[in-house]
Length: 380
Image 1: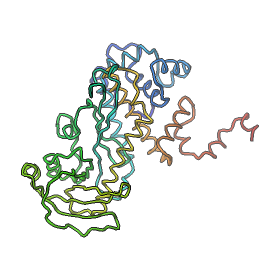
Image 2: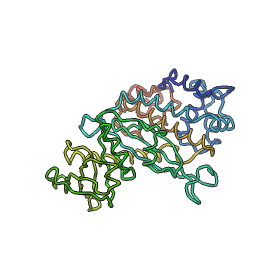
Image 3: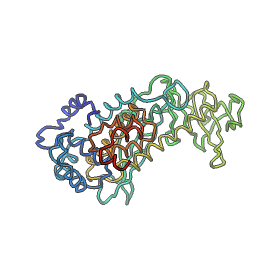
Image 4: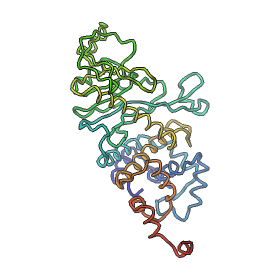
């Protein structure tokens, strides 16, 4: 909790009157409690109350005053979830400064746009109707491959289509830095939107649809089948309406998919990078799928301690803040193991007086040498 820059959070809390009329559990205490939920993998309000009451003598270290389940439930239901969204972006700016570079050995910043669906029980989350008998919300994410950090996130209902979300300016999808690269799956195919990216100087790499009609204007470069490139063509859209949406030439690269023994067609507006590098960048899009898999398996965003829309959105945003905080610790300490192992270390040291940074920076043998107690020494 001391790693959070709390002076940056107070203006956000005041803007939404987050602590107005609050007697026992203010915003930062709510944040602390929900961090505890994320790290300890708790499932219900009763679990939270029981676990924290067992540590009542240590509350003053983290500023807690109450862990009553009714107080936490009211805070999750009534306190605007936008507070945590803005806190997420404030922490991202701090975390991004320490992020390592991407793995593609390229100076251009690389981003991936994608979304994932979080299923909900319709009988308990009636506001999240997705299908006739199913509820869901959608988490839209713009992933920065420098450090594998989500630089933009938004929650919508499960029916929101990916490309409609990306095109709607009200959703606030940020403009990418100049000369950046955006990779996406074919769910984001909309030629007018792609042309707007092209006009802004953004390189897009996106999987083409199988029913795309185009005119072949010739070979761009000779295909290198040793690197899995089957063809590299310059094309022009032939359908009249699609040509009006994108009235410029495109590059179509056919990549061999060794896993399924088939091929993938990739569209891009970049004619300078090699076909092998573009194939590598598109395959690197899988990092966002791994990110979604990680947060669903290891953070509490599939089971919820509240049923209202505000409570669900609050829990998801605080889970994302927790992800950024773990990433920040990993970058700061140059921890060589996985983020999951780091989360397990934090879980075990949660109420310990040891410095987390000291534990992570010193190897295991040295840590055991300095931390031996007389009882421990009797066993060595």
